[in-house]
Length: 461
Ligand code: HEM
Image (cartoon, rainbow, N blue to C red):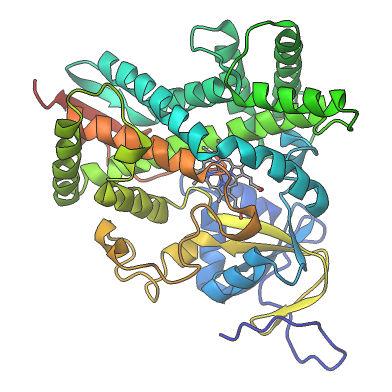
């Protein structure tokens, strides 16, 4: 496949990508929603068309044209975006739910400013502090598991990651009343993200919007209380407010408005909770089904546990000494492809892989197909962390994206997965009680429908 990306000229012989435009006006939206509402999940819609049409195809959903691409060459060109011809774009429903000031939806210029501000929050020292907090919380949760019993991993992981996000962003503790309410509202927003953007009281989308409004109000109240409080907190919100106040008192314009801070705190909860919890759940399933891998992993982790006998919590240094666990995390992310495709919009007519791509179309890099391409990964459906002993082919590992829109929380996410792994494998043995790989309906990120029930037994029990 040629990776030629150039201005279309009058004489271009490039073709329009293959694919069906579906019915007038609604295109293939019904087929898409049918997949969203099935146990195979919304990716099934893309998988079927990828099989039928190949690495580049076109469809129409929610009134817009989408082109799906699944080659490392197109990933490189589009995600790096050196030509400046592409911008990030989510479907309308997602945009309205996270808010137009969220860095997910901001214009390229605005995105640069907000990302610059938020990137400071993810410094090495902030990740180090987070690891300690997170470890403490994991130890507490695993301590509550019975000596022997069945645990639903997804429920536990959603709880743990939500608590971690609330603490890191706003110093909210699980006992705080507001946390439970926020959790339910965030879940309603996530369920509304793939819904028809119809605002009628009984629709999923409307309920998601109402949940968003409640969250924004709560965040507004938390911010006002913070401004009046004498207590200095060490969290993301404090940092954003202090920087902002400093700029204003120096006579500079506000760095981020309150509305921007609110949209972006909400964005970080949504971007960080569900994704990491789903990834942890798949990882537990893959390990439970691959005992040889688990045994190698446990050997590595028990050595670290032994070395840390006199230390209560893991540090960043410990996580840097987990080469096998890091490969387990990477392999789990490859196989699960939690974010199945990376959405962009075309700002200027282009030619990609020999096909015409028109201004205004959406272009989606199909990360899942790349992750499961046998030409890139040998035996792609085999869970084999050692495949990452060698460097992966450039642009073939897209779990966190690449380029200027790479996941901001990548180090936090990896840290959460490694800390969870360490505590799990050094405390428990487990058996996966339901091997069904069906995914939850309406979920934006691939979540196991079974939630992955496991029967756990303490190692020393
Ligand atoms: C395993 C867990 C996670 C996965 C698989 C994941 C994956 C991704 C992916 C694929 C993107 C979009 C990249 C693109 O479109 O090119 C993204 C963006 C983002 N992620 Fe994550 N993420 C995870 C955890 C987190 C966490 C823990 C946080 C924050 C605490 C976070 C914050 C963000 C933000 C703010 C963006 C938007 C970046 C931008 O548009 O500039 N993510 N993530």
